[in-house]
Figure 1 (cartoon, rainbow, N blue to C red):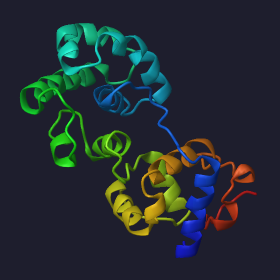
Figure 2: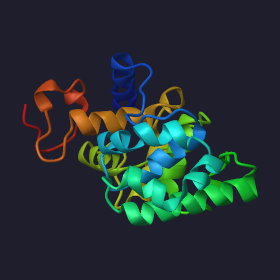
Figure 3: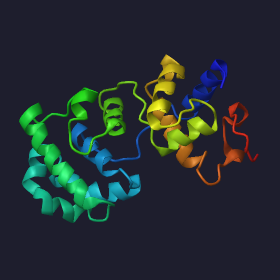
Length: 210
């Protein structure tokens, strides 16, 4: 996409939703970190259902340790890969207490030291909690960026680096949220809703349907 078209693309998404929010429900930095960790290969709706009661009793690393792995599994057993995720969340809680004073670290390097936390998860936490203009490339963003020729790449890391280069600074903070929402609700995987798309004229997808 041309530079002017990219600016207009994000300008319209900003106009539609000036302050986009994550669909995950959380109450503090720690619960967001846990929610994003649990969301891998799971839907946000499913994670929210599982964590609704969990976060009432375990909203800090120490409370999570006190709950224990079996107690945690009882809350998240409806989520895919829950056994492994429970191990990671409990191990994560211990590391947060022992190495970071019970606080969620503010750097990608330290976040990625935590079990179950990859680059995408770290970027989400840095963006939402610490207001850093990171690009957390999930399947929706990867699809949209390649389909529209916005920031094409062969893998999520390439798309992330491309986005960092082309997204205008004024839109950088919320860019990944707009892209996720656009991919989830409009530019869907199987059948994009081109007729309802607000950026249809800017899109370079060869198989547009409207």
